[in-house]
Amino acid sequence: MPEMPDDKTIDKMESLLNIASDFTRLKILYAISDKEKSVSEIVESVGASQSLVSHQLQVLRNAHLVSTRKEGTHVFYSLDDDHVNRLLTLVFEHVNER
Image 1 (spheres, one colour):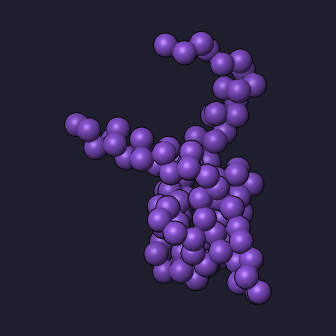
Image 2: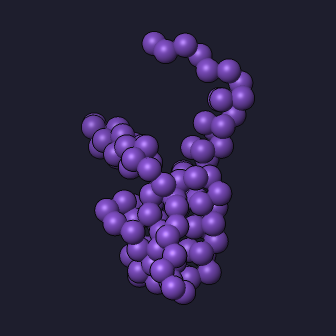
């Protein structure tokens, strides 16, 4: 068993898990887990309004779960790094193991 993290680290972990645990945010993370997408592509994948998706993307970006790339006037979103993909995979495997 790993050593218990300090309280500051536990607090950051709690915040990250709370942010990732939202239904719409999870759908957004899955929508961009295979390739980067524009907001309109994410809206289509998730089935939510553009304003809701845009707001949730900002929350995910502030938490460093997604990153952006600009191309002209278009913004493309992708997972920030492989840790996010591994987190999604681990949670998926855990909930489906029984």
